[in-house]
Amino acid sequence: MAQSRGPFMSRSSAALFAPPRTDLDDLSLTTRLSGKVSRFLARNIRTKTLAMRNAQPMVTFTFDDVPATACHVGALIIEQYGARGTYYVSGGGCGAPSPCGPLATIDLLRVLAARGHEIGCHTYSHTAVASIGARELATDTERNHSFLKSVSDRTAVRNFAYPYGDLSFRTKRYLERRFDSCRSLLPGINRGTIDLGALKTWALENASISRRRILGLVAETATSSNWLVFNSHDVQDEPSRFGVSQDLLAFAASAAKDAGCRPVTIAEGLRLAAGDKTNDSD
Image (cartoon, rainbow, N blue to C red; front, side):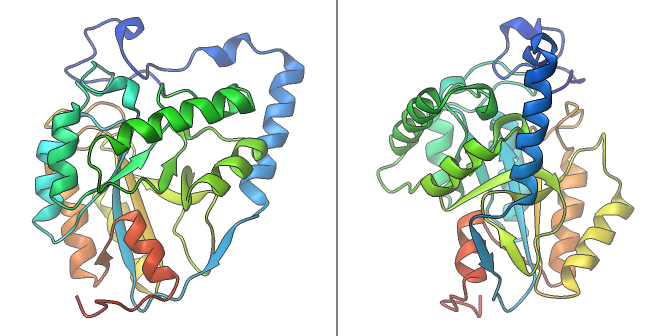
């Protein structure tokens, strides 16, 4: 995560949960090159796929790290358009300050889940998965999974998102076996046969996307039974570098609805993409 801007950036990044990464600067040339090769393999070799069979185009709104504003502001906005979101949580940061504002408390997550939003999994400590060993990854992921189950005994934590969007071929293979899907930060629209180990997404951030681009993505999604997944962080009038304003989030949700895209969580999207027609008339 790069340096953010916005009302919460007066605090030192060292005191924040999920601060901008600095570890990459200390890597040797050999380690950097091997990392690039591994990331290339992870992005281009599909080892867990799904041929999409959904009857209509779909749109999903996802929120990473889960700033409190994404819950009590973002959730209300997308609910107005019949949508529920997928919120990827790092349990170690609940209630902590972050570059995107205060993160949601466990009580706020419980309210979110009770309203039908999906709780998804990051790593517990928001560690970039490619930077740690297999044992540490398994321990950290399981710790987060156990924490998120405490949000609600009815919460099924089945979907993962890579913190910082960082992945390697080794970690992708492990996590795609552990979860139903892993959402990446690779830009694109999911169509045809999709890579469940690296679902494509598009950043919904005031700093990087225009309304014209949103309309173009929605129109492209609606030309067939494609699946557009948006990702963001905080939702506020003056968002961080990785956040979205209320009006732009509402614009995206409205545009998708007007184009006939069905709003789904990641879990619902996977079910429909697999050909499940239960309640397909909704």
